[in-house]
Length: 203
Image 1 (tube, rainbow, N blue to C red):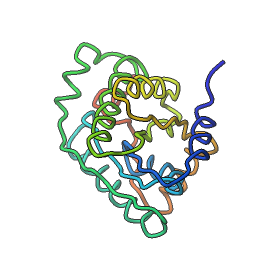
Image 2: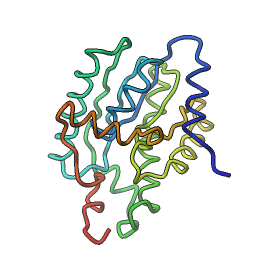
Image 3: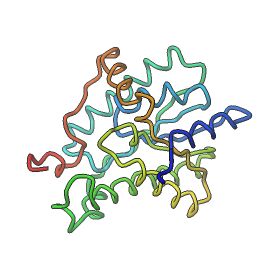
């Protein structure tokens, strides 16, 4: 029987006795829009914009601009703080890690490594800066494997002793709501996941 990660998240949120801090890895503004609105009632949120997989640099910069834009918009109505840690762009980190897996299909081994690169960096940064939890927006996408994302989160939690916030943000119309928020704030929505290999038509 598969875990219901949406319910696990709800259980954690309802069990919080006071406001906590979460370092939330985000792949882009549109995906983060719903996740932020959902979590901001419980946390001070810092977006961790770390995506060395994105190619080319111009696309990376465009997505970062939209990320900053949505944070500014949501900060207008959020009762808790929403901030951002902007990381340097380094596509070489990604390319070295996935070497030999360039022809893997989408949602295959290459994507698993990509999740790990970004989530592990998030956890390490969360520890260094005294966050209570780390999380990622990745599960809001219907194209992402929530089971795999949460399994990676559990592994990293055990390795680094930092709390992982379980999630399946696509549940409860999360993906649909992210589209609605993107329209509301006139956000750029990309047509491929991010890496050069996800642009290939045969995938």
